[in-house]
Amino acid sequence: MLRLSWLRSVLTDLDATPEAIGAVDRALPDQPLGQADLELIAATFDRPEPVYLAVDDARNLDAASVAELAWLSGHCPGLRIVLTYDYPSQLSGRPLAGLGTPVVMRLSPLTEQELEPLGDPAVRRLTGGIPALVAVARRPAEVASAVAMQVARQRTEWMPPLAWELLRVCAVLGDLGAAELAVLTAQPVVDVLGCVDALVHAHLLRECPDGKVGHASSLICAAVAGQVSAATVLYLRKQLAAAS
Image 1 (cartoon, rainbow, N blue to C red):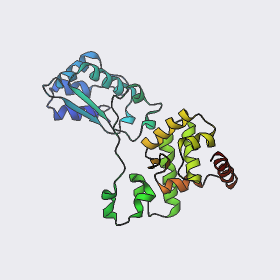
Image 2: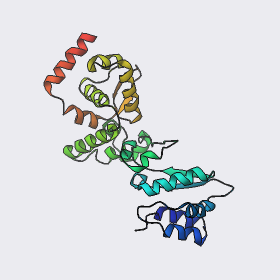
Image 3: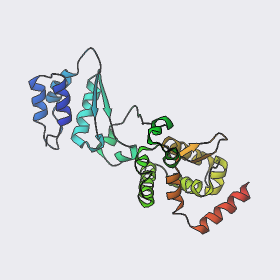
Image 4: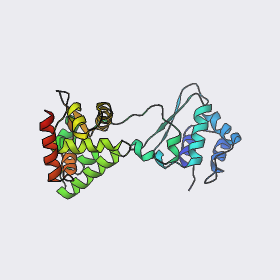
């Protein structure tokens, strides 16, 4: 398989010279292109208008491809590189993590209007609009619960362990404020707020009008709560009562 098939496709669309396309065809599996070949390719992007180069599933790019992207980004002023991947945690330990991303854009959860054609008003409450959960919202409980747990784990993979603890506490006690979460987890408020921000950004927690936060998806809430023992629930409730 041609290592730079994604780049060859772009050059073809831009009517690049045969020399530039030939440079891509000569790419070795694990060795970045030389500067002369990169300069041939860069000439294709030297245009009056910006050129947007998008790479799907960019998390799978190898080290050589990342090095070439870095060179092109630094030497082609009109080139805009768009990399798509599901979540930042997927880049952990991969070559793409070293490239850096100036802008990260995430798709928001599906809105009530977008979910309306499903004809089930409970889907929004069950899923929080997260597409992966919408797809399994009415599947058997064990399937929906497994996917919910997978979504929660993937979206917190890059966060501190405290973030998962906040999900556990909110799963069994409901909506809570930052001060209450700090007491229940025995962690500084500033650390709690940092994790709350990350969880809200990941659409796992929702913000309430009274300043508290709670689970955005009842499927994820139930899946996480299912891992908490009755003894722990009783202890947390006593801790919350004492802090009130």
